[in-house]
Length: 358
Image (tube, rainbow, N blue to C red; front, side, top):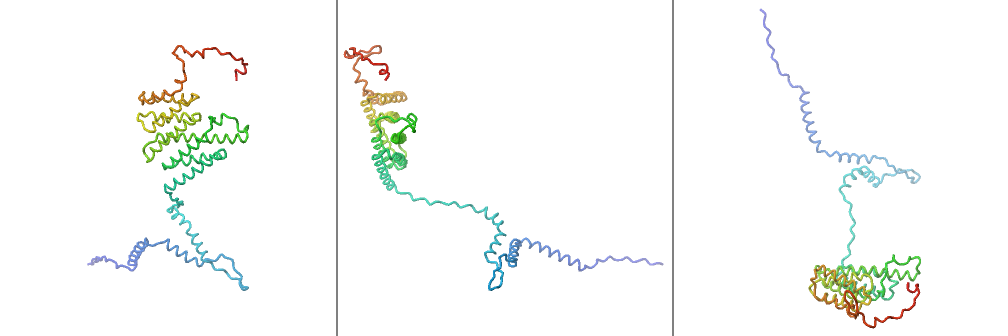
């Protein structure tokens, strides 16, 4: 009887040395990659390049000493340049963006005390006024300097500037109205003396116009900054003086507007009385008639704008017009009765056509 073959038991093969080595290698690789994140590759590369720098050959020419030719070793400056060449692009990209250009700040001059500024303004105004009084035609540029001093924010300096320029204009304003330069003759046809006079006149008119604008501004500017009430009174006084002393000169209507604006207030004060007195003097001493006509027209427009609610002294102002005292005849809307002396026929004087035209 044949015997059955016995079942073979499957045994687990023993672990070989190769498998143990593979597991240990996996652990080593895992630790390697774990520590690799902490490495500073850039620093190692820089150290490696710095170490190789010693092996770099010198590019300097050899030198002959004692009959022998010797090579020159690289200097520290050359080594520094090589490091900078390698790190140049990196520095430009990182540090150049973070650093901002430094602006050069100019040192500010210390501000002078107010008393010192007032003292300097007094000296400068006195010097300019003296120059214009002695030789006005040769120093026409001094008008701009006078106007520039008046741009100060100190009330005392503004007051000094207004009063000083008033005295200068009272002495230098001529007895005629100055025409604009476009209305006169061309500069090529004028002599040297006439050109000097015309340049002085144009400088006078331009500075005088700026001065009148300042008077209008300061006269209407009350309150706010301390000392502005005093400047307003000074401006009205200057406008009144210029209108009564030189009513024929340029910008007469601007001066009249300043005084009429002050009279539009129903509250009377010293400035109101100054403006009223100035217009009264203008009506009494006006021989031409045009200044009085402009003043009356401005007053009528002001009263109409105020709906005729004005002070009674303004109505009494019209009684000082010379028309009422010099007109001796009686008149109505239809006819005028003249005195007997004017009715007599005067003998006519023969004149030619050219004489009559002239």
